[in-house]
Length: 285
Ligand SMILES: Nc1ncnc2c1ncn2[C@@H]1O[C@H](COP(=O)(O)OP(=O)(O)OP(=O)(O)O)[C@@H](O)[C@H]1O
Image (tube, rainbow, N blue to C red; front, side, top):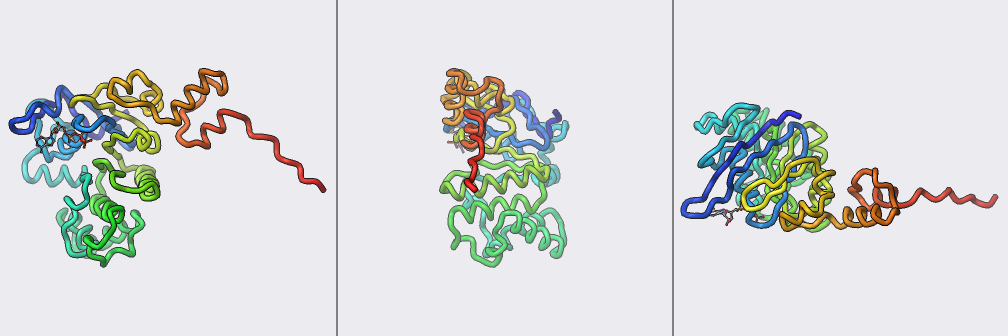
């Protein structure tokens, strides 16, 4: 599996603070969805800021497509055009007078013409399902709508990698489900996604791979099917398996479903493993 981005032996401390990242190594598999999973303060946001060059490590390196990150002005412009970051709080990212203007900022900054930038904006707004908001002032939008605007701003740059810091934070259940569906679609189009979260259910819903964080370093990285089913490993990062996985493991232990089945990601998938479908009812003639 190739890694579009990788971090090797990163070490970083905010000025005057204890280290936020220590000896951290991780690979971002190309074309897949990686969850950076860990408790509050584990260093997830700090890592994302390193992955697009916003922070520079005290030691270690970030590699983009195998080459060391270029922190020159020109290098950073190219880096951020290939690796876009969506911050946790959309109010930290949105600043223009209208949604369309805000989303056009990235493409114009990449040097696109007005016409080409407009096409990118339309495509990004459509992908996020917010074409109707194009002319609205962002400050008059709901939190969920602002989140989509911030993501549209990143998507409009057509990055190879989209980094998202706590993408569902502050969203209600419906808003989170809608956003998960949008992110799945972006993944299906070949975009590499990296998202930080302490919500293990979000990792279950979306991640192909998981990097488990604790105290500024990666405890383990691997396929979601492996890591999310390992209660002992998750406990070492202060986490529990998703409830659905706990039920599945308990059902396996009681012989209620085969031990060889695939980790269920939805209640329906669990039910399918628990019992064969009942025979179709005959309708009396
Ligand atoms: N701007 C900053 N200045 C100083 N210390 C910081 C700054 N940002 C983060 N930290 C510290 O760095 C450590 C890692 O923080 P970080 O925000 O990366 O963790 P996180 O895993 O993203 O947390 P959360 O899930 O709460 O967002 C914490 O101890 C935090 O207090």
